[in-house]
Image (tube, rainbow over all chains, first blue to last red; front, side, top):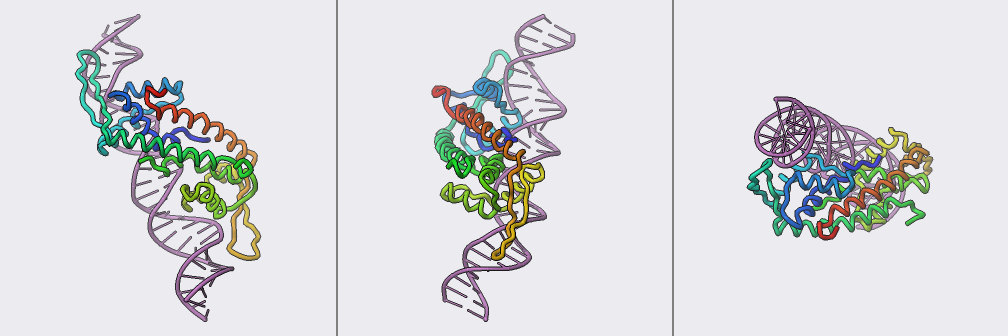
Length: 112
Length: 112
DNA sequence: TTAAAGTACATTGACAGACGAGGTATCTTG
DNA sequence: CAAGATACCTCGTCTGTCAATGTACTTTAA
């Protein structure tokens, strides 16, 4: 069966970058919004979510800071850096090219 | 950077199924045709190719037999089973759904 | 004629990303 | 006060991709 987890591999970075392209946000919120957008079909697992944040932060694509919540649990907010925004644009471009190629490869010879 | 190898993960099965949907073929030939179709951008590495063949054969999606070449190196041909053809159709359907969702997730909030 | 390149298949071990399972802490609600 | 929601984090496992390496035969060019 075509596995969503495998498809997601390599896409998670870009999903998070996209989520931060509008405004700063935090893990739990992004996780929920991803679920909403895909009607529950994609669920970024927490382990995946936080390891991806670490990876992106180490690479200088995002920066994090603790929010000053006066109520509720503490939140770690993430901010997209310039470098991160550039990567985001590149990844979207790459995705278009790559997904187009994959679609071509998924067709039978007759359909190409 | 958005990595083709990661994107390919989970797609390789379907690429091979697609390649066999028309007629029986063998590894080296499929490998070259994938390169041609993508203008050299996708190269199924041999290790990936042959482990994927094993996986699909163990799952009953393809069957293999040795060709009777009277010249040149021996070739192992693969044949798509009914089960494999069904999987192929399912995977194409899944890909459409999944890639659509990923595309949506790659947009900024404003673009959705 | 012989070395290099092409055809063709195969395996091993390393690597990296997704995830299950488990944990911590706070706040809200019945 | 217990249960569930909010919110974060980490460890170890699993699995697919790939680099490296090997085999064996054929074709081509020096």
